[in-house]
Amino acid sequence: MEDEIQRYEKIIIQLRKNLADLELKRLQSLSNLPDEVWQEFADVSYRLDKAEQKVKGFFKQIINDLNHTRSDIIESLEGLILLQEQIRNIEDQFMLNIVRPGYQLKKVMQQREFLEAEYHRIYKQIQRAGYTNQVDLEQDIRRTISTAKADEDQSYEEYQEQIKEDAPDLAYQWMNVDEVMEEISKEELIKEFRRIVIPAIHPDTSNTPAEVFNTVYDAYKKEDTLMMEAYIIQYRGEIVVNADADPLEILDRLSDLLKRYQRIAARLQRRVDAVKTEMANLELEHPEKVQDNMRMQRQEILQRIQAEAEQILYWREQLEGLVKVFQTQSADDNE
Image 1: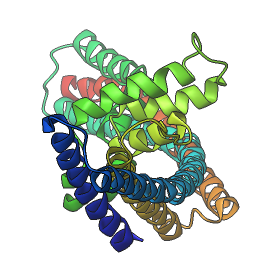
Image 2: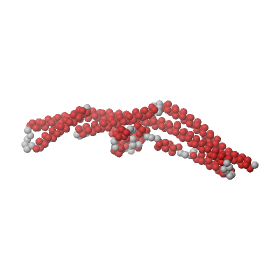
Image 3: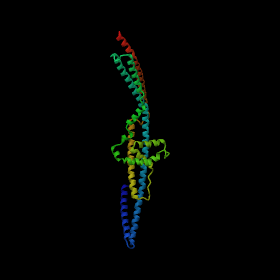
Image 4: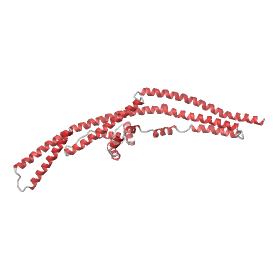
């Protein structure tokens, strides 16, 4: 069809030139034009109208391709959102079952290691006559136990936020250099997104469900250009044309728009495929299996937390028992 379009473009351009020449002759004529010139004028006008009608016939096919591609984009977009939701659910489960108890395990291990190391430090100090009296020793022991307890109060929420900040955005792991180079100006894209998408999803200007708004707006906040372009295509709606406009100009705009849609559809499909591959690598295509594994890991972590907690109690008792060690050593030294 592209070759046929180009052929008719050339025909229309030539006929428009012929018509312009005939119009000039008519204006320059001091008397009535010969009948053959009028006939040629009518013939060129007729052929031009037929050629333009033929081009307008291409509009329907291109618009069908555009709207079909738009449907593909929306389908891929919905699939990608579903995949990302599955990933987020797994991530939430991971945070709940692994990261949070893992953080607690890390803290109790650090506390146990601290108390153990402090016990050995204070014990050596006693053996080396590092304390002049029992009061100094008891102050050191209380300070050690208080320091260990204070460390328990460190906010997990702050730690969780740090994890999120340090974690790379999954969406951008699958953008190659060619795709980056293909992107339209981000500034212009953001303007287009604000003009078309925001009014269509915002609670103040639409009846869009909150979860849809949050999902779409998240792409905007992250400046995920591919998702933003896909949403623009979705919320712009199906393509219609102004029948009164120059058919060649419309043809150019439709052809350019179709190329853009096809490019975005291809990129979106590549991202969907990449997410599926990533999920397969992580066995996320079987979420029940992943959740079972995480529950097993959680149970193992909780068991280790319990063991470390018992050790913490043990080392606290050992630290407090150092007072008796000091008293015994002082009594021996005084004999």
